[in-house]
Length: 341
Ligand code: CDP
Image 1: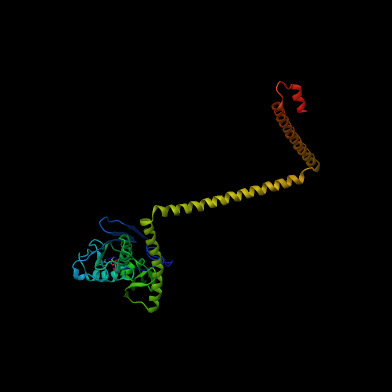
Image 2: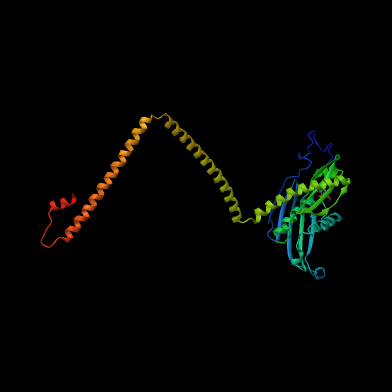
């Protein structure tokens, strides 16, 4: 075991690993990592590395363990022999048996066991590398493994510990804080904020416990967000991703369009003001001349149109006359010209 640090906070009040008192360690999760399990999740939280696997629901043997109206949820927490500094003796211990029991119970209110009477759902949590907070890390991984297995649940479960070092409450204890601190309070809760696991090691006042629970609530909010992001990555359909991408694209286009229309409006405003300026500076006599020229042009085109209409009418009359002419009489070109006049 590493030696006790001289102090747990630096001159700025930051913890030895650089965190604030209310900050959790960085967490990454990956779902569906085991092909033979029905559901699985690998989770790293600080230096903790945990693998959770779910098998079931499946038939429970021996039959005497079956529950007529619901499934039996079995939770087994285990630390790999190589997960800590001193090798752990393989097999169940008092500690792992206790953690398995309370961790399984942390899922009681959310797993919808009534859908699988007489069946068993096995949850295995294997700690591959331990660095304080392994039971909470295992619960966070097991939640996602249960979802990955398709077990119907009312919601997720998140877990995080709060503790006390040098008289100060700190969220998500690291190894030195856990080993040499004054208290360790691991808590699990549902998304509704109902506490499903609460254990305590050390001494805390009632006030410290209340404040600690509030700190854990904040921490669990962050963990729920991480879990939900992992679920979207695992189960989010291409359609959902497309919708998200479309929405982003739409937003981009809208902002571009807004920019373009704003620029166009500005341009129009500039043009208008230029026209106004030009109109103000124009000589009124020039304007009159221009107007007169425009009217003249209009008259000329009107005249051309009238002339065309006259020609068409004359051609029609000519054709009618030719058709109605008595046989033997032929019209001359002069007569045609007469009609046109
Ligand atoms: O891991 P968690 O905080 O849930 O449980 P703990 O009993 O408070 O143990 C704290 C830490 O002590 C573990 O995470 C391990 O790093 C370490 N430990 C150990 O080195 N050897 C053990 N047999 C048990 C725990």
